[in-house]
Image (cartoon, rainbow, N blue to C red; front, side, top):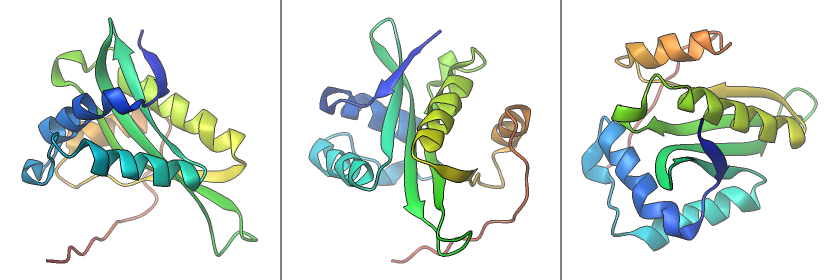
Length: 148
């Protein structure tokens, strides 16, 4: 079992290492830019969300960003978007990812969200199986456009 809690400033570099190690575009992650990442945490918190980490034996082994926004549908209801879910490769299949999802879901419910959603890149077949096994349905097809 991991302790899942809001991220602290001192956790940022370790969380960025998780992002880089699990990313399909690791070249964009830089653990030396702690203040920039912390700015993202603060902005997420201003918007009613948070970034949570999973800690095992004092080490940050998982991370998840929980973004909450007011929708322009569903009578202007609140919606939750899960982003940047990463668990250290040697700690996978131990329930840590599920614990991160549960923490995100609890936060979304506390904030009055009517829905929680996420996207997962097409090549991440293991992640797709994980989300399906944790009660998420594949209801949509996502599209992204990156800018230079």
